Length: 240
Image (cartoon, rainbow, N blue to C red; front, side, top):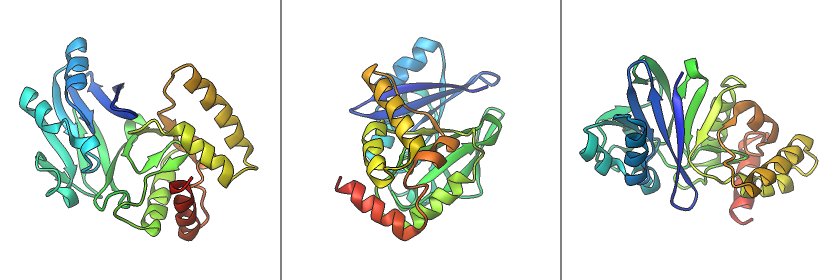
């Protein structure tokens, strides 16, 4: 079983430190900064051997160079964004795999937030690292893509098994849920979830990872009936 550690940084980012105990390999997902990651790994006696990037934004790649310089790790990321992530060693796209020890991740193309955004799904662990594509009760802004692309992304992700844990990169759940209640005011599962989220945040607890089952029931973007509805909801959330 993978050991997955949450490292909160900046105002609302989560970096994921992932250790595979059999091989003793350790990987970092989307390091915004380096120092807290290196410190956490050192505290646990882990040696960072890899970084996996989901997309090029600086709050996901800003720590790449420093971690690589400190550890000699190799960096895997989206082939379509190779020019925007100069530290990449391994380029991947839909249909490719990434490996951490004996654990294998399938690469899924999920463009829209950025043009080359990818996600990493690890079937054996029922885990997916989705960057800024899917959030708890939300989805990423359409900076470099379309509502049609994001709608397709939601179909790809909702096809994962119910129990799949979704590790996204930001603590946006409370604000996402406040909009979700406006989009679907009669959704009882959503109302119950927001009660739980508000209590968790009041206690200072993180609300992610989430699960595919929970997002199917409460995420207004995954639940949108069409690309047009998703686009309308995304515009409404942008102005919420």
